[in-house]
Image (cartoon, rainbow, N blue to C red):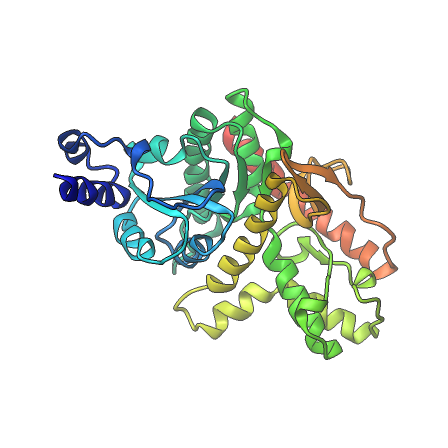
Length: 352
């Protein structure tokens, strides 16, 4: 009898959707907690079976600040859950498949990470891509508003410049909007900037910090090379080279993969780096500062990426840009012009 209960408990970790099994075993999902499970935070990944979602899920399973990890997707979630659940780390993993299980995946979560969406495929226009991903983000955010309105939301789904405004409008409609808790993940731009600048300077990338502001696409990505730490200077040619490479890092990967994919692995790494910062903020650590695309008064735009201080309620402080050189001031104007249209496109999608 005891052996059967242990088997049922383990099965319920992997397949919490199997209601018939739960009823017959007398075990509820909330009771399915492994002995010795780690203390920490409850994290959900929406889109966990995708190209970003799978490595993201694996890396989050390794994070000691995560106690419960919920993996949701519309396909293949049980397989990814079974695979990752075999890792001998503290977090308990549960899988959720399809729209009917979205609410169960979200209930009680402290942090929700959203890499869900489709990549651009041959013959698909940017408008096609926007309409599909915008609809996905809207549905997922409606679930968040209902089931975990106080969770910190890390939004990865592209185009971030438009999907963050979409999420904000969904939360406003549900009367749950807290701008501090909605964070567009632009960390990949920072990771790339640190790497590329370190290559030019001959340094370890872990010793380099490059603020990247604006947005998360093309010319809206503005690395502030005049504010690099450690302090250094670049020639005009180096500045142009680095800025262009940081802005077009995604294209560099797509071309290198020759049509077989996009920047999924580095994106997962960057997403985990940012999620870890959010969890340290939730824990109450002091001085956790990262760049993110958030509701902002730094410019005249309603959303803008800049450095933010992360704490128990999300982005507790949004920092100003600091002094810019002439090259950066020109880049800022280009970024704002492009960003304004992207933000309005997101708002209009919900209000239409």
